Length: 218
Image (cartoon, rainbow, N blue to C red; front, side, top):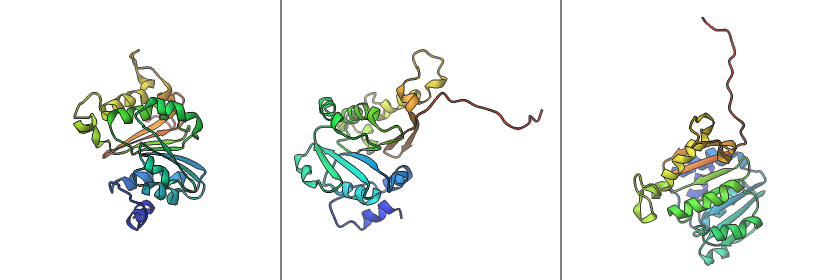
């Protein structure tokens, strides 16, 4: 059992609600930040339990910010944890607050899960993510649910939106002028899809190149 799953199973603090397969995903992409000076943003505070889980997992050097539209969540502030009240689906909220926020190494979107909320939060905050940071979007199964603005092959779903990011990741190889190298291409190392989760990891990149070593066989 992973450290995070162990914390979850023994939790007698504030409510945490997670799909169980998420814990392996968290550990895979977050483990390198444990014990480090790390700034973490979690969009969607709910009952505040996951903020306490991140605090326990990352350690005493972690600085954690939670964002939620419910003003009651402000009461969950504690040492290492600050809460900002606002609507993740409102661009003006992000524009008004980004300058006062730290540069985040990890951003977790566990907010409202509506398509416009996912897109606006991503578009406003991914460019501000640290150069080696991790952006994790969870509960992306809502991209297939009409009540969240999704649906299979629905062009406005975040799953369909993210497929265009795959093209941007590979834009170095495009021979079509409609697909050109852009800031996503030069700043993004990987996109990892899981059941209901997308993890985008940053790493500064230059144009890929290939080499050969050894002696030809013929």
